[in-house]
Image (cartoon, rainbow, N blue to C red; front, side, top):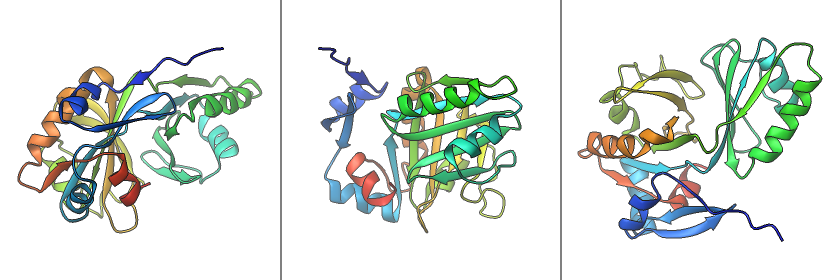
Length: 230
């Protein structure tokens, strides 16, 4: 009998120290609530919530024909650079360059996604590389009316609605470290995924909490995320 090893977010220790309720999700240890769930939902609805989504599937697809392959395999629209599509509930595909795409999906989906994408890449006429970055990258979710204000304090991008609408993706510097910023609103609730190397996750988490300290910032767990986002 094969036993899958327990997988931990780089922020696991912070969540445990904060007294979070930890549950198992697809072999990951996930903080389902860091404080009272109702308070977390209220803070994110009216102010700002920060959640750890580092357990989500994360895949990079590169190659001249990568965009067409992703559209064929995962559906969605043809993407221009810095555009995203959303399919299948919470599966996001972001165009970072004409030949480089980031895929972010539900926890535990990476095996199925890798199989589908690698099988399609093997039949492609051009060179396409598919890289699993699930354990190499973190994902933090900023959600709530004050999300763009918080991000603008640590990032030089213009987050105005006309410039950075939902389903926009950009590579940039956040708190002086290289990150991807993906805007993924849920209806009228602004939301941003910030994704980068796991080694910077603790620093980024603390920096974002500090940046939002006067914006009704609340660290939130997965229950609040599911209630407000996906």
